[in-house]
Image (cartoon, rainbow, N blue to C red; front, side):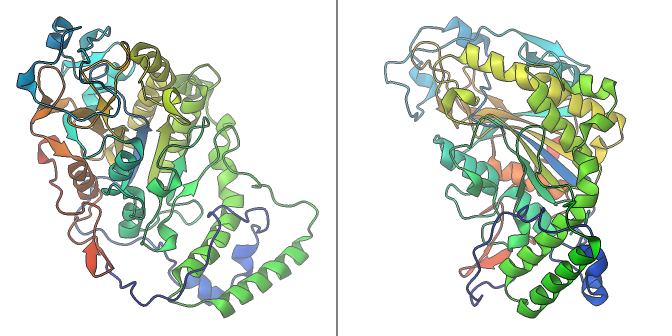
Length: 471
């Protein structure tokens, strides 16, 4: 599955994949040349390298960095040492804003053992705690960066700079698309705004343009212009689309992946005018389901709506979905520099019920077994206080969750030290999470490569270790 980009012709500047939905229409399928329609598209589904446990991924991205100390990694000693300098025996850590004379900050959160597994979960997540038996809680995650943008790039692409493919792009590059009427890779951003790493963290990098994500709009209308234009007669529309198809075919170059992706995007937009209205119309859901996700209630309506959309897209064949919690600057994310209590209480109230509902809904519909769910952010938070009540970024030991798709739930993997500073038992870098995700999708990190600038590039950069103990 490798290709050589060295001698590619200059690429065209392209607009996002959803551009032109209003300019295309459902009749495109009927007006396409039959031979062209029968040819495999750029994201035709392909066989995995090995037997797969999962066919799709939902990444619940808690942007900004949720604190391991307030969520899934209780540290009684940290409370005992509250207000004291960090003992030298725990080692050093590099931060952005924590001062050298900073004092340790205990947590006000209470933990209780949940489920049959007895895993300790913070009172921030009373509903998520009820389904903790479905999760593997990885308490020993590590990354290389404490700056948002670089850490977000690493979380998504395994590299700390932009320009490399995200895990979503690699997933659909390896497996293709299951649905021909919905995008294979979708990002549901937070309505509060963009993140530090911006759209590049989700992108396809040097992979073919067909592997880029479809960025949906926040709010109740994720896609604009889905309705067919009422003022255009069917015959006129058919003639226009037939001409567009002929011009596309005339201009097509088998080595120009940008143009091929643009043509495919227009055709997908046309098909979405038939299928997407059903997907995005949440009124088709029962009142019980809407209430389960917290749709129509505050503060859960927005994230609940997007989690419900993720379920609806998964059951219709969307391969990779990222549901972002947190947008805009600082405190609008899980970025609790000023006040960890205020920030995390607010963000947890927005997400606890929707995440728990998604797990329950996937499970009762028989989708959890084949859907890999990942929860977490780009790093954790510091044991030391910043400004008295906040916590700084922390990359040396934090928690992420995995569930479904062949993951063994009700287990805790690894640990941090007694104050949550360093991962000391079974540390797992982001590349281990990437390797595990690919493994569950039936993809081998060593075979999923793309030759770029003289090197066979892959998601896991050097080498990722599959976390077999949670499978």
